[in-house]
Length: 335
Image 1 (cartoon, one colour):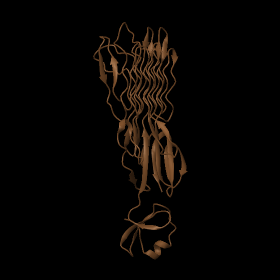
Image 2 (cartoon, helix red, strand yellow):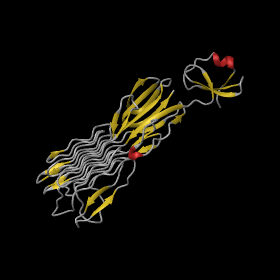
Image 3 (cartoon, helix red, strand yellow):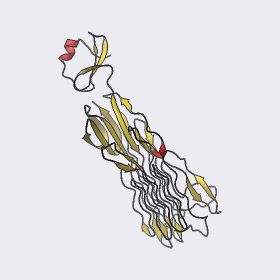
Image 4 (cartoon, one colour):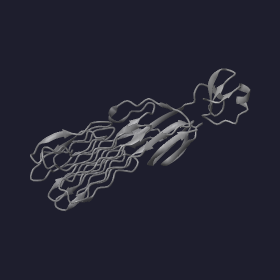
């Protein structure tokens, strides 16, 4: 039960935002909002952006091969007037109880495969979540697959969006889930003598990855721009796909460029950007890792946030505070 006080006793208390009592004078539950007592239960209004870890770009191992860019991490928003990934509407603002722990986790980006594997596939990003609201990891880039039975995508889409894969039999088909972001672009042509001439870009939260054209790799799709922090910033861009003449560029929001030879750059940390794909004519060439995810929370500045197991910073923007969580798995609570 809540502690019971008369109005006179209540007014003599030393209170902080979020405190709740039962007022026996008025026969109602009341909460302290930081400056005065108000009727009803206390609740913290929270807007959020949640971005999953980006998928890695694919690697290539000898011969003439060109690999797809990684897809951006899934993008979810509950910011008023903004959208989630894949053109979906924003979630509703949520109201949370003070002095209650809510789970948070920041997903790592997918790690590019750096071993003598002729398939050269990347790995998918790891999901991020807040209050059990989950932004899934970005799809992995792929160079080619060994048999028609396998369904690894030559590019990953944002949040596991669809991409095209190439089989040893020369078939082209669709794979992936198509959630929380746009599709990756397709490769150019079918599998011929262990080679493809160009691969598509990874899908972004705000736009699809572009298809490869001739020998030019596709660009990664752009992410979504959010002003939750008070500054307009892009998140969840796809990685570029490699090609024998032109390497695709990463999409706005942390997607990295493809390379021909050497190692592609990683997706930008804490954006959920996809890693760039690689290409080679003989030597091994590695794709880039996906960028880690992020969780951003905006709430009234009358509340103070506490955390366990997380790396975060908090700034004030007008009448609100903005907490940016960049690493860890743990909990947050408000008082």
